[in-house]
Image 1 (cartoon, rainbow, N blue to C red):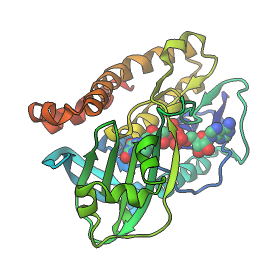
Image 2: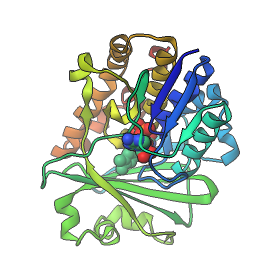
Image 3: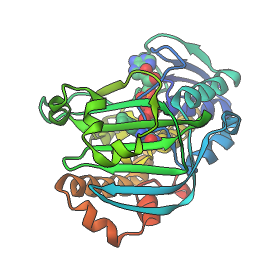
Image 4: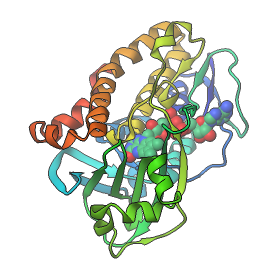
Length: 327
Ligand SMILES: Cc1cc2nc3c(=O)[nH]c(=O)nc-3n(C[C@H](O)[C@H](O)[C@H](O)COP(=O)(O)OP(=O)(O)OC[C@H]3O[C@@H](n4cnc5c(N)ncnc54)[C@H](O)[C@@H]3O)c2cc1C
């Protein structure tokens, strides 16, 4: 029987563990952080991700995630609202990651609550890397609010690459999550409330809402693609540790589940690391390129103009891997 070691128990790591277990392998899963835990994330779960959760036998519906049917893009004072191509979901990482971890251990995966080191057939699902030059750094923040919620996934973009996402999650709560360059946050002494208060549409959206706990922050964030080095990989990389795309696409959890599932199966079945990495590369290359173009146009302040010509469902589909490429 194959023995697979998985390092990191976020969506990519638990997906790898579950798929390796489903393929008949024995799995050791290493996680260095306390679980369950809140994590800086928009908690927008792309519709395609729920298909993977179903295949894993994860009862995600029991958590009663919020249903998100519409997408609102806001550039300065211009807002445009459209239907999402399919219903998406708002589900906190506190709940989602715990559901996935419970499923992995329920299937027989052995959880080690300690940092893991690669050894033998190993899936690396350790998340993104954080090195970035001072001055050019982006920081993420998040908090849950109570108050009126809706089925709109609202994205408020700012020049310079900053954005704030507001969407409902389970339990009638609303997640407010964003990222901003450090020089913008520094203008407000790194106080997220003060920073958001300076963005009129966000300020208006948060009227009547009450923050439930202190902001949690993360950073610096680096959008990274490790495929240039993939020929040298000695482990199966999955999730953000393989490729971290701009979070405003809301496709990170889906990509993590997808590549995690592929990595777990590849490791259990002994597919070569080079072949596995190559399959991931071709699956992620398109969405990554589109996300990069969008990021540059947001930074230059021309996304507002370009967005009028691209229907929302196209934007949505072009920024995520195609389901058919994952098998
Ligand atoms: C501001 C922001 C907003 C986002 N919003 C969304 C969104 O709305 N929708 C969406 O789909 N995606 C979103 N994302 C992206 C999403 O959060 C990530 O793509 C996703 O978490 C990737 O999962 P992962 O398993 O690869 O990594 P992670 O979730 O980071 O998990 C990695 C795990 O590995 C553990 N670990 C690391 N090193 C070790 C070690 N040596 N030993 C043991 N354990 C280790 C860590 O403790 C961690 O638990 C957002 C990201 C950011 C920054």
